[in-house]
Image (cartoon, rainbow, N blue to C red; front, side, top):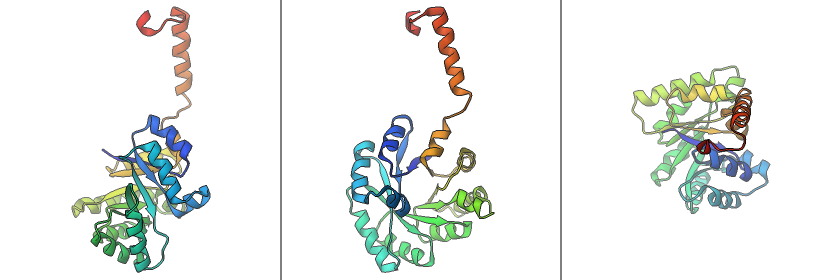
Amino acid sequence: MIELYLDTADIEQVARFKQCLPLKGVTTNPTILAKSLTGLRDLLASLAEIMGPNARFFAQVVSTTVEGMVEEAKKINQLPYDMVVKVPATEVGLAAIKQIKQEGIVVLATAIYSAQQGFLAALCGADYLAPYVNRIDTMGADGVGVVADLQHLINQHRLPTKILAASFKNTQQALEVMKLGIGAITLPVEVAAQMFAHPAVQPAVDQFSKDWHGAFADKLSFES
């Protein structure tokens, strides 16, 4: 089954969607944390309280050298949660991923903008790959197409990695990548809310209620 994550540091929204969606966990990045003005340790403690002991959390290194990324990854991995370390799929990042995997740490290669970039990260041992669907679209390329090519490469070469598609502006983008059989997806709060929202839903529910109460007043279904 596809792994579903929220891409946020908003505790209230995580609690909201935990009640109605089968969330596997939460993804973060340096920008999300900076905007929330919440440090990683404080955020993780709050998330774990909401999500429970089986949740998986993603945290990104901010070091810029191979040695720094590796050491930072070790520290993130030592946190008392199911952690995945995010590393940008740059030349430096790929070198770091190779070393981090030697430590047995679960890694996501992030900031992926092309299929070949993601494929190389997979060959370096990345457990997850995060192509930026909407960001690719805004650059004039085809985000869903990049994900399709990358999934094809993974299947063809039987690589033990999962695509965790990220960066969505609308539900259609999310739907199209899920149709490709990807292993995971992370949604911003606003797109997650749109997934089960439709202008026709509430009027239909209201009509059901009106018709029922018109015929049976305040009785519940099993009392009729």
